[in-house]
Length: 350
Ligand SMILES: Cc1ncc(COP(=O)(O)O)c(C=O)c1O
Image (tube, rainbow, N blue to C red):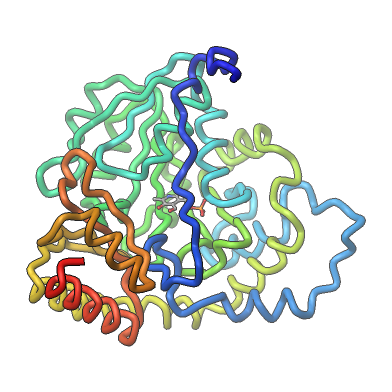
């Protein structure tokens, strides 16, 4: 058996990512859009006539132009890639030197550590406060080269205070990545302000509200100099032509995004109160998912729901999320099925 010593020292401790063996279950574990595939992207894929023999346009200019017109910016403010994970990877690749400290809040999206370390950075943790807000003084005093913050944050679900993000941008000397993967569900965004800062990258995805996770499209927004640096580091052609065309079609259908957000805003409080009635302690959410302390053992709950055809995400063994699970907010019907399955489990024990 080959020893892991053969690996680069900075990646030797890596483990493979969450990879459930899905067999038709209701997926409330990945925070995708429960309304199903993006309709405009689906239509595009049915009708598209892409010449498969040709490379994509190197930096996906048409998608960058579509995003520019959506936000009233210029296409040179954008870098697009294969999922926002690629944009995160490009950010660390572009701005960190081997051994640089990369500041990652905790709890937050688990892949931040991976992208920082994969690119040679060393991870410095800043604990979120008791109510899962940023500790700006702690971050600023860390002297890290780069800091990343998801707002709304995953897996906690809450947004960070706008004044804390602004404070961070004013006081932190390095690069600030603001990950707005769930930004469509929130009223706050730093995108309109990208030209004010020369140390900010805002990251967004087509995997969540846009309902296109299968196609792997994400983008970064920054001032033109920062975006140009990132485009020069990105692997050319990393976004394939079909995904680019589908994303352009999806940008053109903002009604679907509004409908998706309205559905979450209507269903989230109902799911919260249903969970509370069953003894859960949900944390406040500005997103399409809810982190909650389970009234019974987290692993038993996750397993018993799976047996009943529902996948949720178990965080219960992690520090500061003891006995917590995360539910994607479903449609009214999905949430009723979830709550009645949990009622069953509470009654029967498994
Ligand atoms: C906070 C956050 N950022 C980024 C991502 C990556 O999304 P994708 O690579 O699908 O765009 C996720 C996915 O769960 C996420 O929760």
